[in-house]
Amino acid sequence: MSLRPIPFASRNAVAAVPLRLSPGDGEEDARRPLPFEGKPAAREDLPYRVELWDDTKSRVDQVLAVTVNASIGYAAYYAATREHPTRYITLRHKGSIVSRWNGPAH
Image (cartoon, rainbow, N blue to C red; front, top):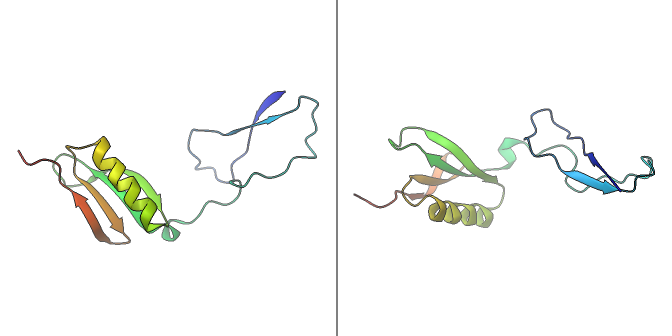
């Protein structure tokens, strides 16, 4: 059995590289494409964003999740409020803020 990296369709791919387990006999021709291989979805196709803001609430430090589905977006938002309870977190749909977590008031 051998491990070989699966090529990404984009040069802007993240550092995590999925690996495919295959027999070590070199049968490259019989390779079927994986379901997640292919062209990544465009940003405008993923309207829900979970954003983690800096301490002054003036800029987004990190986008934690991007999704097409509202319920997945809310689940990611809820998880972010539990992971970062003292930070300002927003759930955004396109340009509008759907929900916000201000953290505890001190």
